[in-house]
Length: 442
Image 1 (cartoon, rainbow, N blue to C red):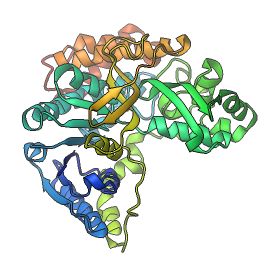
Image 2: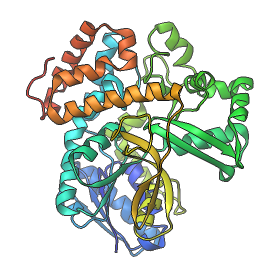
Image 3: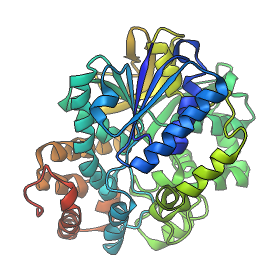
Image 4: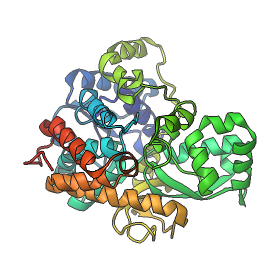
């Protein structure tokens, strides 16, 4: 019998979908599903929802819920993490303070000043989970969904001995989008994608074994609806020749080119990214709903006779766990240490590459070098993330400043003195969430 621990099980939509997919695999039908959350009310709803899925499918699975992390982790075979450290009332300052200084972003969960401070808050919590795994389930594999993915995974890979990989939907999601643009069935597409989480590149994208990039370029340049669907990423593709993962809203924050002036934001970062002026992730319904309207949505879910289809969906953590437990091997893009896998990114940085899951464990695939025009930006962000992780592990505010000073968008907008002032303000705003820091000034 397999035991799967869900840390942050109160993320109801994700937990429900993942449990549904897990139970479709024969080796996992009788799993023990251990749900853990720090919010008792959310945990109760999660337990009832998961039990409803088990009952609908008549599965022999067992559902347990606890607020005791050690109890959830004890003897687990796999650990799934979906947490938010601090909530939206803290997250908002990651965006609002930089905007006051002229850095206008809208998501702020991966890199840049906002992503770095999210990492500083979240890394201590993630390390606590990882150290508990070392104690209570040392042979388990963690599959992390929490952002900022690369920095969190890098910190745990550096400071703990657990087996882990980070999972994100952007690689397969973008691959499906490109296939749709060129009219290709997804089962006829093959690709190799590598880089950093939210900044990986399709170094190869083929349809029936033939390079599909000419067809993608034709779709982007000749069909306005395609160009306008992803303006930032399409501009990057047209000028850099390779397509990048994650949305235009995200990617507009990771470079020098699109957000350093109001006119550029108007031209590139509103109409083709799905974000309106003054609209930020932390105030959107999908985020606020998790804190303000989730009870109402949960009650509507329970009121349905069949609240969720039992057919397998697309949460590929289920396929990974099945493979690890002896089922069919499965390849995915995961976040792992760079042991020479991407030759022109820093050694041991957390890279996103193809990974095979099987009963032998997780085996990353060698990719080689990224195209040089893609590697420059990716390498810089990897170096910034290395500094930010070291800052989080040591509590060194100077490293926070140095990391943010080299962020491309920040450096395109602010002077060093202005960056220092902004970092000090953000350190003060976050001091209650940074137990590893003794000083909150650069």
